[in-house]
Amino acid sequence: MVMALIGGGSGSGKSRFALDYAQKRFRRPAFVATAQALDSEMAERIERHRAQRGPEWITIEEPLEVAASISREQNRSDGFLVDCLTLWLSNLLESGSAAPERAIARLIEDLSAGPPVILVTNEVGCGLVPDNALARRFRDLAGLLNQQAAAAAGEVYWVAFGVPVQVKR
Image 1: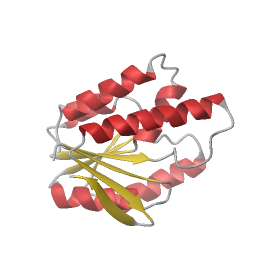
Image 2: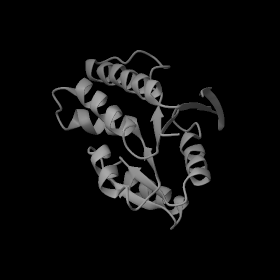
Image 3: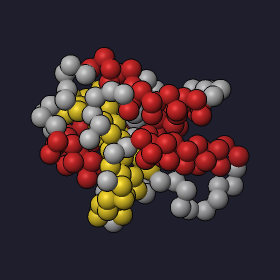
Image 4: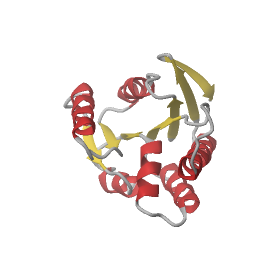
């Protein structure tokens, strides 16, 4: 396994499954957190998740340069868990990226060529069509990102109601 993709809806159990999956495969796991503590609720959520991982995890907080941070830290860990791609995409769009499609392709290419990585992502295309252009653009780019990640991944899992289903071997 060079790359695995774990997706599902919000609150589906995908992050819990990804943590368990990583702990079974990596002796020195590293967690790449793309979330940013932009308000007190998010700061509390980040702290809660950090406590759930435990001290054996190396934590790397990186909202945008995910592949570069993994490259810098690859001597400290034998495998990386990136949680999550859709937050990375949101960060990318908020940064004003003029070419998100190129950034997506470059991220997947760089991650495919690096050390073992598990990617967590949200499925955002199963709901209603958003009522504004930015939300529709995000949904469409998230679909592109998820498709490219799934194509590059050796294993793909879909998690629903806390139950993982392998959809690609």
